[in-house]
Length: 356
Ligand SMILES: [Zn+2]
Ligand SMILES: [Zn+2]
Ligand SMILES: [Zn+2]
Ligand SMILES: [Zn+2]
Image 1 (cartoon, helix red, strand yellow):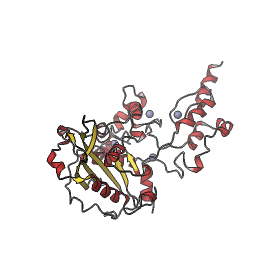
Image 2 (cartoon, helix red, strand yellow):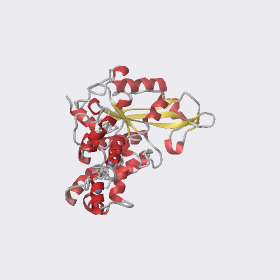
Image 3 (tube, rainbow, N blue to C red):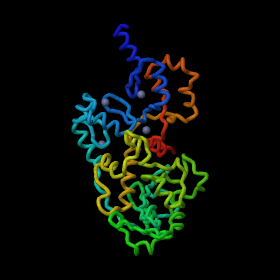
Image 4 (cartoon, rainbow, N blue to C red):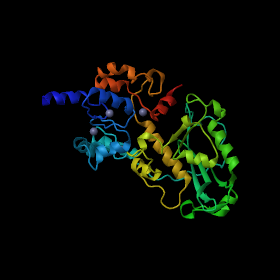
């Protein structure tokens, strides 16, 4: 076979998103069917390669074995935290001032529960409000094998504490984990009963909407941000609709390349540039870290599409087997054009906020 022909053929079968090359067009079609490439994937600002996660983009740009051409530009004009590229070292420096964050100092509790009522956003923002929740656990059970929620904190977008409380545990505490929680028995003796904590938080999140009617759009209910929220909610004995939850331990762009969760400590260091969980841990600090990560991800600028998700009606047939012939005649760029995301990108919340 003519070598030149072969290389142009493989070039034709090159994925327009991740640049993988295939010997045959039907293999590229199959790849597109299972990859869910989209404009929402973390993308190299230099070569436009799409990556599945921020971690794989980091590998692409910083190493240990980076793409040499991209790495050399990135080292001068790229931000090590958000991995975006800037026009000049000067605009990079301006950006870094806001991207590099420092440890949050609790702003002080205004009043333990005064803010925890049904309310409109005091800042007059429209669209769903966002709150972050975090708990600290102590050990329960005869062998100390299960977590009991002992402290809970809720923080708004501006890092104000909306609610915080010690929680009186329902079971006997076998280990207060004092070195990391700083919690002593007397703290919990006066804690709020868990049932009361539950109903207060849930009333606040639902914000006057019955839980079963919470819609993803234009509702009064709040978006809930956290890290491993399923665990926190389970320990609080609460349920909240999945489409209102933004979990930094589950969000595909924030996963490891192995698709496992990163720790909150790692994510905060890698994307916000500061340390948490050194010494005694305050749930306020976790709330702030997850909120900041959420806001950073939400601010990523991605092109707006009318139907961004692969599950949106008009996209259901895009890569159907019945269209095989038609798909094989498309260019890789055309295929990318009709490919959609298989997860809910947080930038879409930003669009929602702007909605009247
Ligand atoms: Zn690809
Ligand atoms: Zn997006
Ligand atoms: Zn690149
Ligand atoms: Zn940055």
